[in-house]
Image (cartoon, rainbow, N blue to C red; front, side, top):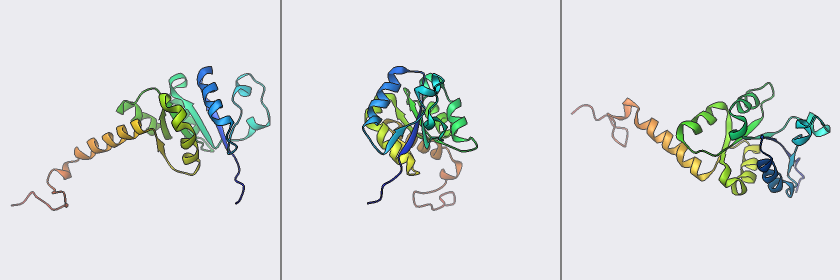
Length: 162
């Protein structure tokens, strides 16, 4: 089996509790490596801080949407995992429009952070189960609003003419 390079992850948060919880989850996994983090915030940058992160985990509650936009749409795009306390449809929609590749709830961090990092690093999307339900609801509600669906049967047959 071939050795894979570690996934370099940057934590973007203002919360020491969030940073500590995320660090505890990640530290025991050799395929994931936190870069920069506290050293950048304190101005003591090490060699890792010069490396572009593969993924940024953004604690939206403390830092807002702006880091998601900057990281996901920058010159060298970084895939973003948004961590949210909320699962409101408009809020989740805004996170996705900002460029998040994954959305997980803060309350499910211990269950979802590692799978989210690995799936996003593999080029996939990832959502906490509660957020996946919100996204499906958004899609279904928007699809049902399309006028062309009103005159079609479930098989796609035009029902507007007798």
